Length: 194
Length: 406
Image (cartoon, rainbow over all chains, first blue to last red; front, side):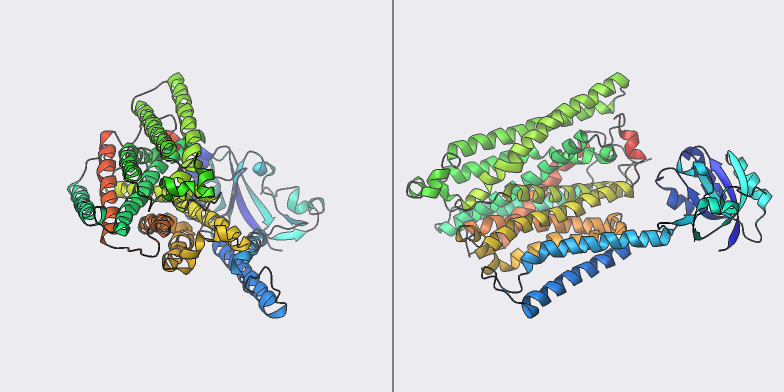
């Protein structure tokens, strides 16, 4: 639990958002995140985020699935319980491919979802601060983290000048907590407009 | 500003002429030493290689028109930045159709029953299986259906290309709507006919009837996807070539990424069909069915058979999986060439075991004819590209393509 200071700028339109992102980035501010109502193509590269490594993780999970399936079936059918099925060899690789494929896909898919949830800190009952209620509906919410040297007023002026409809400062919990929103009034109800 | 109009460069011309020269020389030598030789095996080799190449490359260039029609029906806009490239490739279809028809006429009227043993009437009389199939496998039906198919592919393809020229001039909203509608109608005609031919009957007639006693319900899909993935690779090669020559201003790595996805996905799909065909036959282990795989897996074709899986599945699967490699010009070019050659070998192992049996040679004649067809593709695609502006500037979907983002 660590409270931090954020400057929040809200944009009505994607078209305004993109040049704004470029300008804020050029000015050297640090994005906490940009909350959008829908996935916006190209926003990640505009923000300068590095490419996600979830693919690599997925490939590794897939490999784990493949290895598990092949080694387990090999062990069962050749060592533990060899059965003659239709005169086929005990090591009947073609017959195992569907299962190997399924296990590969299952491990990769489930592994990637869990990793994604872990990275985004998503889980049942886990709560995080919402910077603006309309961020899930129709508003593009740019959140900038304030460091020690950040000049808040300058930043706010910059955000207004690049087209933000609504600008405010919030002191909010950066991480997650378990509980209910209505019991965390200080964090939720009043956005601490300074 | 990129160049709008393709001009055949000196280097391109040099390569085309070199390949064509080698190819025509091989064809002439092949005709002298193989086709007119006393040895029946040499004759069979001559016709089998011509059959393999003419069918493979015809289906590959026709796959371009399939791609155009499929994306048209799906209301796809992203391909508009390079659509003139598959159009130019598909303009080779009439030429290759005539060549393929000549090969079929040569086989049928030359009574090459080393290729199609259902051509031997006396043999068919005493063979209950071939007799049962004779309403389908006979020269009259074979040639009629072949000619209808070749004509329809060429004609509807030409219609689609002609329609596309309209997008070079400004259209208003009503005209645009009508334009899209006409495109949709002709594309659906092509797709339906394509399913009736390449998706089912044509591979049965042209290729599966080499092993006339055997059949597989997966065969046509397998052939179709084999040629489609090679066709997409050919499109990729041309798009990269043109982009490197400073054409196709709207094409970015985003478009290449999507072409790469096609190459990746359909390589996997090809493997799926390969496996589905193989596994059921392997599992059931019925002699009438396993006869197809016996020479391929255990005979002299063993090497080619497994090489096929490496070049067409393992390598594209592992190398094209990464996002970065689908956006890299060098990797995509390398894999596109590999996939085309891989599927050429795939068609080789479909044709050869049933025709020349264990006496196969991958030698001067096979590679010479490959060079001939590569030269023909370069020659006619080059001419097709030079005919029209490379970007249909006023196509209603062009904007969608210029801002395309994956």
